[in-house]
Length: 68
Image 1 (cartoon, rainbow, N blue to C red):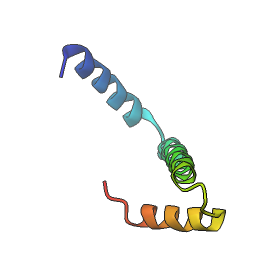
Image 2 (cartoon, helix red, strand yellow):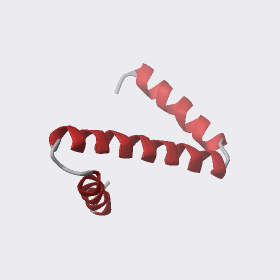
Image 3 (cartoon, rainbow, N blue to C red):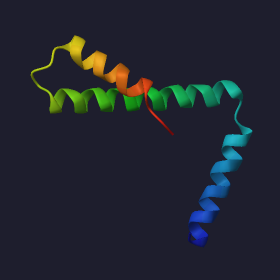
């Protein structure tokens, strides 16, 4: 990692540490909703013949078995 990237990471860590738990949760929820929307759009694009019910069922299955 470059010195610049290390500096950026340190600043980001300081910012996150200074946030309230509520703000961290808010950011996590925004990230989740963004990922959900992106994946839903990808599924609709990959399976244009699927109904919304089928898309939602597959999306729930994917999220249920997601790993970090």
